[in-house]
Length: 137
Image (cartoon, rainbow, N blue to C red):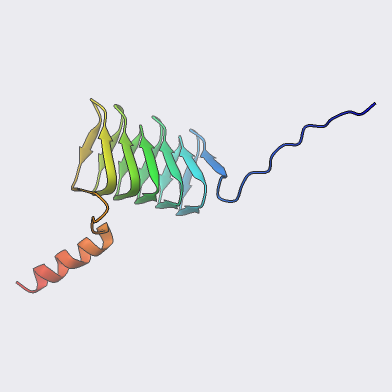
């Protein structure tokens, strides 16, 4: 009698899911190729080539760079999101945003500058240009 064993598929490279729990505080920068979910607190920047999900209890004090992001918590820092940035009704964002598309639910808070579209100047380059223009005056 033959028996079949189910093989669990190994995660594809770059498809890992990283979770920071609600009772966790991380001080430092996170760099990942996979999705990241934060329900705790990050004091530092996050950079991923995938998606960032910030839960309602999540807080980030630093910059965020990702392919896409769903924000329900709080961020103090600049956001650079290549595709879609979704600010849910419980979100509070203080900082500049560069994104392909921005969706803000009723109740979501955003205070800062926003640049949208494929030709948007990255935030870091824009800051350098503004300093140069100020120095030339």
